[in-house]
Structure formats: C-alpha cells, structure tokens
Image 1 (cartoon, one colour):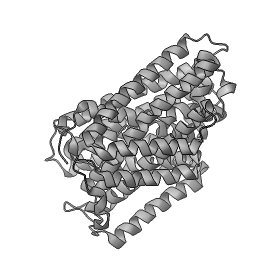
Image 2 (cartoon, rainbow, N blue to C red):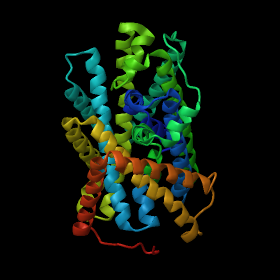
Image 3 (cartoon, rainbow, N blue to C red):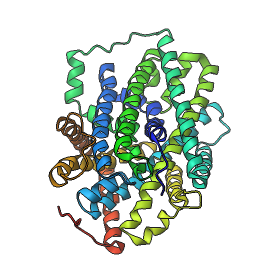
Length: 436
C-alpha cells in the first residue's frame, strides 16, 4: 500500500471511530445504577484520561513500528507473532466488526423512532451495505468521504452541546464532588462496570495506528493524530453528557437506549426531536464509515502469520483492500441480525481492554529491548501515563470478571479460537527473531 494519507485523514479517522453510538446510548444505562451525577460525569473524564494515556503510548509505538495493523503490528514486534495474530484476530472480529454492528443497530433504532415504518435491522444493514460499497471501491474516495463525514459529526455534537446548555433546565442538577460522590467513584463496583460502556464509547482512540503504513511520515504525524483526535473527543464527550443532563430529567433518560433522542425532545420539542434523531443517525454514518475504513487494514495483515488468510490482503486497482472490507462487513451483518446490543458492548469492552493493556505494557519492553529505535517522539509523562492506563484497565477487567463473568468467558473463548487457527494454519513462529 502507498503512503498517501496525511494528518487530516488520520485525525478524522480517530474522531470518527470514537464518536458513535456510545455517546448517544450509554448515559441511560449509567444513570440506572449510579447514585450521583458527579460520578456519571467522572466516568467520562476517567474514560478520556485512559484514552489520552493510551494515545500517548501508541504514539511512541507507532513511531517505532510505522506499519499498518495497530495492536497486531505492535505485539508482533514487541513480543511474538502469536500474540500479534491474536490481537489482530480480536480486532477483526470484536474491535471493528462488533462496533460496526452496534452502531448499525443504534442507527436503525434512531431512524425507526422517527419513521416507524423503517425496520430497525433492515435499515442498519442497508447503511452498512452502502458504506461497504464506497470503501471497497476506491481508497482516496473513501478517505475524502471520511473527512467530510467527520466534519459533519463534530458540527452536530457542537450544536447539541450548545442547545443542551441553552435549554431551560426543569430540574436541579447537582454535580458537586461530595464525599458520597467521591466514594462512589473509588469504591462502587458499578463505576468499574460502567467504564465498559464508556470504554466502548472511547473505542477508536487508537484508530490512526491501523493505517500507519499508509501515512506520510508516520514517525512524526501519527503521534499528533492520535493525541489531537483523542483530546478533542474527550472534551466533546464530557460537555455533551453534561448538556444532556442539563436538558432532560434523569428519570426520563434512565435505562433508555436512545438517550440522545430523549434529550432532544426536551431541547427542541417533539418535531425538533424527530429532526434531531435524523441528524444523529447521519453522525453515526461517520462511525460506520471510519471502522469500515480502518478495520480491514488489520485483518489484511493477518495473512503474514496465517497464509490461508492471504485473500484478505488483496487490493483492487484503486488501492482498496476490498476483500477484507467485505469480510468484515459480513461479520458485522451477522452480529446485527443477532441483535444483542448490550452483550456486544460488554464483549467489546472486555476484549479490547485486554488487548490494549498488553500493548501499552509493551512500552516498557520497547525502551529496554529496542534502544536503537528512533526517539523523535517521547511518551509524555512516562512512566506515569502507561502505569495509570494499566491500573485503571486492571480495575475494569476485575469488575468485568466479577459482575459479568459469562461475557468475559466468551471473550476468552474467542481468543482461544484464534489460537487454534494459528496453531493449525499459522507459520508457528512462537518467538520473534529478537526474543522475549
């Protein structure tokens, strides 16, 4: 693949991968078991801190190993090909296909709330097919489409934030950091479990690392794209959730999937809310597009370890990995038809938290075993930032195992299946040339 993508595309990919159904669907479930609004907002602050810390580390790893594949590329070089393959396997089936399915379902729900005649699943599948066709056709057309969709997405969120704060509140909003609120943040198991939802909403902060092999001068531009995109989304997320809480009563949003639609009813009235549901649906198109653009770059790399997957690496005459794109979309379509939204979110939270934690831990190995790597980019706050990232993620995984054991076991089963595929058909390079 040619190095033809610049910083605008990379930042757009990060932002669009992150801003999706999570921000419009998570708040209602968080309000169901959190006792303080300060605790709810802190979920999004902590999620942003995790993402920024991860982006700082990934910037260094991307500068050291500037190729496509994200976690696959990093773990293969830092540890061994097996771990790299398993990370790529998880990314292909859970990191991208599952979020695409979840966003497609959310898009179908939003449009169905306005146009009841539109079936939820059929609508979601139709949009998935359209976006798959665009990205399967031409890599640069897909890139331009992604940039425009991301700009529209940011404008929509800024408009919603302004509208939320300008709406006259019909209730008292208490976001004071009281002793009770801090206790909930540090001791409540529900805070840790709700970070699954938040981590899903922040999924995509590492998106630019998946296209590093197609970026111009990735050693300098990749870290900028990762940190800038993640920082922008963190600010937007905290402000948007605060705007929702300001505009709509907690009881009206509690337990609701289409929380953006509910909040819009209080911002704009019935007609305005219907219009807003359509606008939110348009913004979700950006996320489906971003994950359809980035995800196949990971699965295309898997053929390096399992030659039977070589068809995923084929590109058409316009530079698009069309076979990988179509394969990912087929997996996403199956998950859409299964239509288990919360299970999909929990599975994403567990498996990606595990994968990104192992990758971030690799920064210590990079500094110890690869001293010859370029140092044009240094991880800000090292070693505090990776330690903080790993500590919070360990907390999330602990409560995930404790309160949602079956989801965790499904995630481990998926990893086991990937290991079996590697052992049967892979090249069986169980250690890298540089050793553990």
